[in-house]
Amino acid sequence: MRNAGLYGRSLGLVLVGGALSWSHSLISVGVGLLAGSLLLDRKVWKPFGQVALQRLSVPFGLLYGLHLVSYFWTENLPQWWVEMRIKLPFLFLLPATVLAWRESSAMVRKITVAVFHAAVLIVGIGTLGRLLADPAWGLEEMRQGRYVPMWGGISHIYYSALVGMGLFWLWVFPVPASKVARYGLAGLYLLVLYGLALRTGLAALYLTAAFLGLRWAWADKRRLGLYLLGVMSVFGLLVLLGLYFPPFQKRWQHLRQDLALYREGADITYTSLTRRIVALQASWCAFRRSPVWGVGIADNQDAVFAIIPYLPYQWEKAWYILPHNQFMEYALGLGMIGLGVFGLFWWWAAREKLGGVWAGWLTYWFLLLQGEAFLERQIGLTAFLWGTGLLWATLAARKS
Image 1 (cartoon, rainbow, N blue to C red):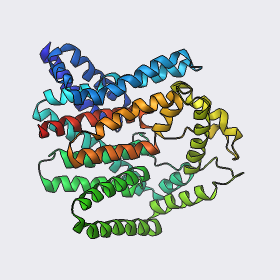
Image 2 (cartoon, rainbow, N blue to C red):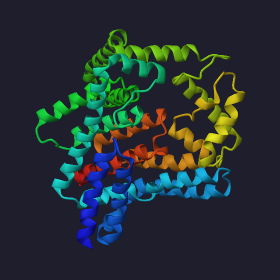
Image 3 (cartoon, rainbow, N blue to C red):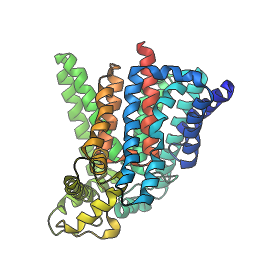
């Protein structure tokens, strides 16, 4: 049974790493193996007694409990079952990943990181190649649909989060062993981010880098000049890209059009940013009606969509969206109670003394969750919990 658990954990780590960018089915298999392997080998549960690991894991278990309790006031039972299924990894994925990573061999760890890099870059380079082969089609897709048609079907927003994870992995894990090779992979990741103009990933990475840079400069005030020079250089680069690089030109054009339409009476049906802002307004109105325990996480959509028609904008119902903000999702669905439980994770995680990489990781995901409710979808939820588990296990082991 112990060998079965060992093989299951190893395969689970590799499957999740390789499938995040393209296969929901294999993600489910990998997550199931990580959970099942723990049941086959109880000895690996011992490290779960660590207070730090419990602090990171317990808030998600409590959130799942709140999801469960919301059954008693939900008005959308079919969606409640969907939410319970999607959020099931809240109960085990983070600690299961930590324990599996600690018990795995160096070879399994290298393979896990390597397949993650390979899968993410294959999807990104494949998409970039398809757009370069027919740039007119690609730019028209971006113009009309306001999305990047990713190879394999993954949302470009979720894909951009995986690219950022890949850059963190190059920083933390020596895979590949050669520094030159790692710099080369970093260059490919940046090529994909810029070539596809993945705004969410770029914004989160730039702001995370700005935070880490300020942290570095603040430690020695003599570095502040160099830090400011770096910030101005990046800003200048973005201006040049917006003026002369077609994908960025399209993105900048969309942003200006969206903001121009953010006015009373405007038709915002085909906007991107403006719809999100208006959805936030509607969510705030719905939250104020039930601020303590929320409307029920399965009823978020019904609550928001019921308010949107009363706001002073023209918006076709088929194009209604939720606010794309994870913190608002919990405030709306589970009230201040749910938002407070979610905040416990961030409070305890921020108190972990694991250095700049950990601070950067938390900052990166905190920013991503402002622009997309990643924990409402399988890919985002798995990437966050699995990635946090891998990073925490590695940094905690190095510290000890």
